[in-house]
Image (tube, helix red, strand yellow):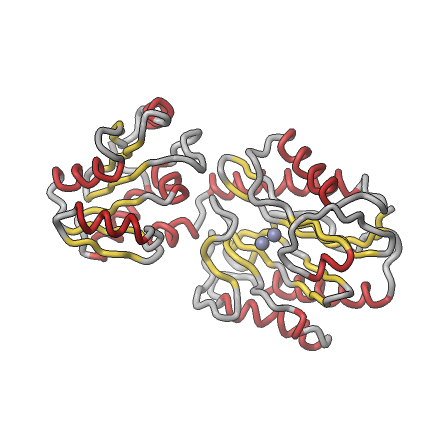
Length: 363
Ligand code: ZN
Ligand code: ZN
């Protein structure tokens, strides 16, 4: 049986790193490498071991049936727990004759200490090995993200249509969640942000019981999840009529969003892309009001590689899926953020989110 492309790519990295095998225990990394559907959740205890010619998945009794089903017809060897999942995987590494073992930099200090004690060979802490592979999406991954993005667009359209002054942030948030989950979203990509009026000047405001009032900005940042893949979308609307200042800030953020979208292409540095959006806001006197980075990669995790900010050294390539999300936040006044999801393609970007972007005055 030939190895799937993701394993082949990882093995090429192991050769470059000069190690015999790699132990992977990050849930998203394991899900990516195995491709197993319906196995992973937040509570899983599992480990993946990959050498030049073997690949094994270790887990405990709670997940073993799902893992065996998922692995049928694949190159993956499934191992049930004997000692601990970690010790079992290390024992197998020794059986395979691995003298050097790569581990992830996300390994906790506690786990690292145990590994040092248990593994007789040399451990190499690596940086973002699987994460870097995950950054470039294949067609099936882009299709899953596109389905999640379409569902997110629909939820926003549906809930925006029901908005009225007096609705509480928590009710709006729940309505978005119920819509997404009842239309096929597996949980949510992240806890929604629904921030009205003065709360909207905090980019990652928690959802409160505050009721949104007529004439206020309302920012909604939400994402569905399909086949494990996340969407991420933000729109800011005005409940009631917008005033001149709201309109001015909104148009500035929209211009920054559009300028950055137009600049997305393979080969552009993420820091340069960030500078395109930031330059538009600086020109309009809002440079100081845009504190966070322009965006981030999206995949099995809502924030992943590449990093799309002023300090990033990442360079876009075809297959990256990223957000473009400039914002302007003015304490006491409120905030505006407009976030789109795109896939980098030859010569530019293809949008995955399609929610309208003109300033909507609702209710
Ligand atoms: Zn977002
Ligand atoms: Zn985002």
